[in-house]
Image (cartoon, rainbow, N blue to C red; front, side, top):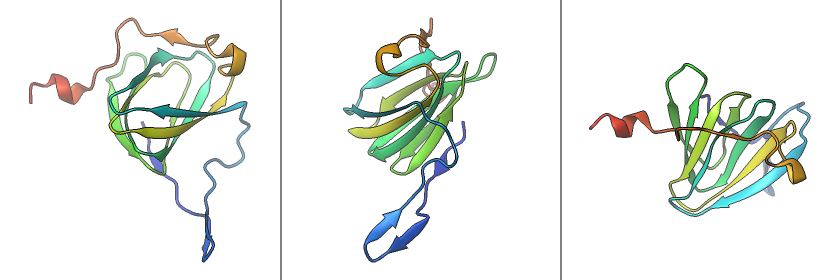
Length: 132
């Protein structure tokens, strides 16, 4: 899982402008709020690409491509990750968090569940399973 820190493209005394995505077609833009401790995801999409951008707060992101180990990252304000088709993904709010999900594909609006396939076994942080 790659985490990109989004930085301003332009900044002056009025504030800053930052492009989250460049030259991407997006079908849905969703704002999600999660209270500390909330778990989201634990599913895959067969066709949908999701860009997850943290606006405020902190999330632990877990992802797993078929046949690979689970990877984790802690995302904070200004971080962006991409969940691609067939990538299992889940999020845990480490504090109250607001994030955007920019979606390319069929998952959104009234079709929200059409490309969502729940994982039989929820993703687990490998560091929490090591007994450390």
